[in-house]
Length: 125
Image: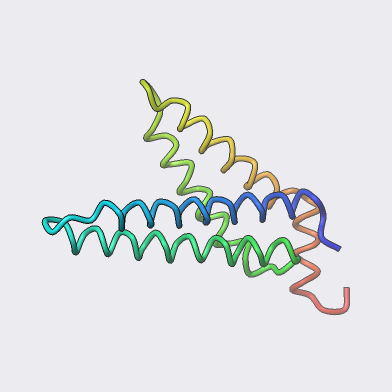
């Protein structure tokens, strides 16, 4: 069985992926002829990054161990992004990103989550 805290972490990671799809869509809608190549490559990158997070989130909510590492890496990246938003009018963005990333990390590294994901890798336990 998959612990609730692991399901929550996976769902939050998938939500981050969906937010990245939204950012990719915003990039596409803001395309201009002067930045066509940059806008398209940025949109493709964030769409792919979002897809990876959604797939990884889906995997850990089902107890699949392979999804944990990409989510941990993404959460650490999000913490760095949160740090860059600190101060001024964007402090609320920093707090929101940091809180979600921290919650995901806690959920993935919780002992119950670690046990559940370890069982996926070791058949017969």
